Length: 124
Image (cartoon, rainbow, N blue to C red):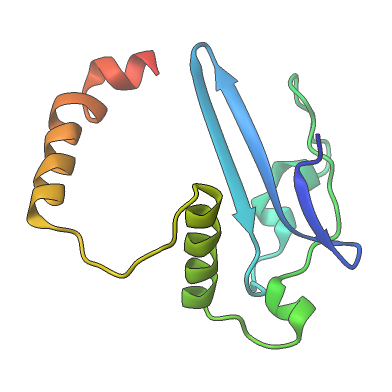
């Protein structure tokens, strides 16, 4: 399975996962604008002598969306595009709104009673 998003031979995004027992951490990355921090400082796979007992990373030349397009891409625009894509994939349309007090209370309750508990975080 391909885990990278490549445009013009340069990686602008990718995905990775780590499994520990019954837990799974899955993350994706999209490089929106160039950064002053070299990738070698961020990614272990690009450091000299890198070794892993798991599936190794495969370094690839990177670029940002802004570099590929030739203009700055506003983060808000990326967020809107992601929301539209996710909603449509789920058979819906995004809609403007605000988080209600009931939703905030329910989220706080879930943190207190489930997701913030030692039991949840040790088992999952």
